Structures are given as structure tokens and as C-alpha cells.
Length: 191
Figure 1 (spheres, rainbow, N blue to C red):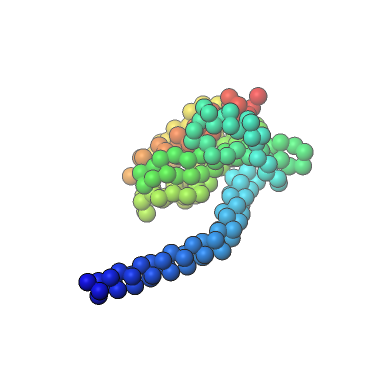
Figure 2: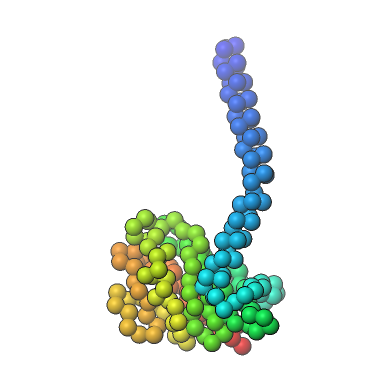
């Protein structure tokens, strides 16, 4: 019995020390991780809406109003070039095959999708993760926000984008997010 108690105490001490080390490490690295994420988001905004030189968060009251109708929306930023509003970046989260897909959609004030950027995903390598490749993301560029965007293996119309082969669920999830962004732009931001 004494031996069992001694082993349990040693195991408890090792676990407590490990937990303490992990907690301290997390506290030390959390600010750097948050800053890296912020820089990654900022770079993505510039990539999908290059006309924007400064990105300002949408008014908090307006954003909360939008979020009540669109629960997939995480954030919306206004893109400015000097004093001129040139577009919006809308961050959405949708459910793909491998879990949540978080991405940005850039829409110009002329009503064109300027690009999308996948930020985080858990899609299958070689299939759903092809959504991060230019062949897919570039197919959204310069599409009008006037109608619903759809996917096709051979896109020909202004509202069709390239479908991902063997990744229908991923394609449909991203289309849902882009169409949500398009709807928000048309109903809330283009006024």
C-alpha cells in the first residue's frame, strides 16, 4: 500500500509540474501567436483587396446587427485608399468536410469579388485542401455580386467558379461563405 501511495504521489507531482510548465509557456507565447495571427489576417486582406491601403473594422453596432442575421460572419473590415472607401473584407466560417473553414472574401465598392483567402481549415490533403490553391481561389476574382455564385467543372458564366474535383462538400461550403459575403454586401454595405 505504501508503494502504491508513493507512486501516485510521484505521478501527481510530475503531472502538476508539467501542467505548470505548459501554462507558463502558453502565457509567454500567447501574445506572439496573437500578433502573428493579426499579421497573417492583415496580409490576407491586402492580398484579396490590393486597392486597400488601410483596413478599418466596421462599426461595432453595424457588425453586431449583421451578425444577428448572419451567424457565419466573424468580422468585417472597410478598405480605404486615402479617404476613399474601396471595398470590404468579410471573414466567414463555414463547415467543410474536415471541419470549419475560416476565410476572407474581398468585395470592391464596384460590386466585384476581388478575391478569397482561406485562413484556416482541416480539409483532406490532396482533395479539399486544394481550395487554398490559386486554380480555385483565382476563379472567384472579378465575379459580380449581383447573383448567386455557383461552381462548375467548366465555368463559363460570370457567376460560375471552378469546382474542386472530388471535394464537393468543400466547394459547396466555400460557395456558401462567399454567397453570404455577397448577400451582406448587397443588403447591408452597398447602401
